[in-house]
Amino acid sequence: MKKITVIISAGDTDKYMEETLDSLSAQSIVNDIEIIDQTKPGQITRGDEVLNKAEGKYLYFMNSGDLLTSFALEELWNICETEHLDILLFSGAVFYENTKLAKRYKNLSDEFYRCGSYAQVITGKEMRNQLKKNKDILPPVSMQILKKDLLIGEKTDFHNRIDTDRCFVKRILLKAERVFCVNDIYLYKRITEPSGVGKMLQVLTTPGYLVKKIFRYMRKNGIKCTGIAIIRKLRAR
Image 1 (cartoon, rainbow, N blue to C red):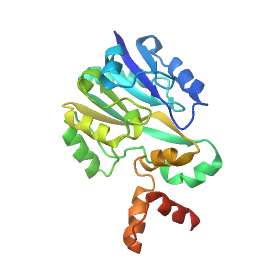
Image 2 (image 1 turned 90 degrees about the vertical axis):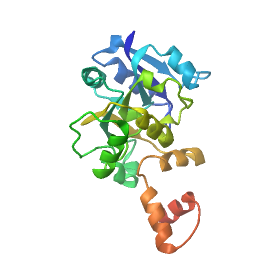
Image 3 (image 1 turned 45 degrees about the horizontal axis):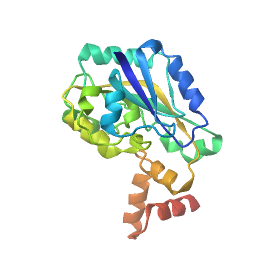
């Protein structure tokens, strides 16, 4: 049995896929991890089929283009085993494809870093409440290590949008009995140029991104329109 199965999903682009694979190859426990590349054509996405294929005791969902620190999976694995965890949450940082994106999405610079204190193993429900109390976001699935057994019976497809599937993240968290959070940064999330409506929707579902501005704009102006229309107005200002 492997320690961790890494399931790679497609990000905004696959041109950085080699860098992601290099990041995994550089892991200190590279021989104890299994990689399932969901970006290849014809890959299975049904939850039960992926779980049957996965050999790891824990699962980690990673987007192509993102990078892990070299000791990330070893350190996260050790914490999971020591504390007998169902879910381990951790922090991440962002880096940008170009300076234009860095200026446009500068509000994302500290979006994935949690500042609150999390000193105890608690239930998923308690963790959700603690995150809210500390005004920290619920991290996307790419900033969590999940125990494989927790996902048994889960009907959600492990598709290429799973990192923005907030319903999946909340549902799994509420099932967990032992959850812990570390504030250390282990993941570097690449921000790339979105294209098309599908990419725009993916950006919109990124935790915190423009959502607050959108609804604040709607309330202030007493209007009803689509999120994309509001974004165009905000960018035009």
